[in-house]
Length: 182
Image (cartoon, rainbow, N blue to C red; front, side, top):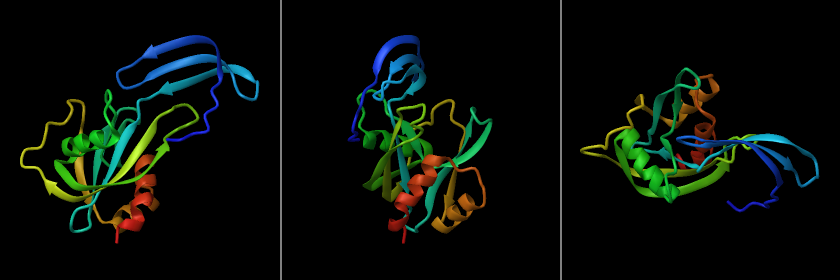
């Protein structure tokens, strides 16, 4: 993602924690405007997301248990970039694991920061078309608790505006894909 990068000056690293999916740091920084202070940041390798569309025009989503919110949320298949993986490789792996489908046609919808106030995570969004059900889908990760959900674009829009719990990356990606969902 091209950015007009303006790196702050690192004055002191106070805390660094390396986690399984992301790192967390607290640093004393001098910002480009010369103000100084301590800031917390989640350092994340990025994620990839698919808006999968069946030949019948249905969207494939997952209702997934998320421990942080202590409940289930509706979202498009997505996953964290691993190692030197390209975003398209990540989402091709994740869509198979989470939904049991593969796509023959991939279009990049865009990329965006998820929560730039405290994280550098970038989401790479794709439209996945010409879906085929896999004969033998790969196993899901052991900690995943996922139900596959098929909705028309109109049903998803109704769910979003009706207050159903849909995560922000999925809502934004849906509206990026909306012009292609005829």
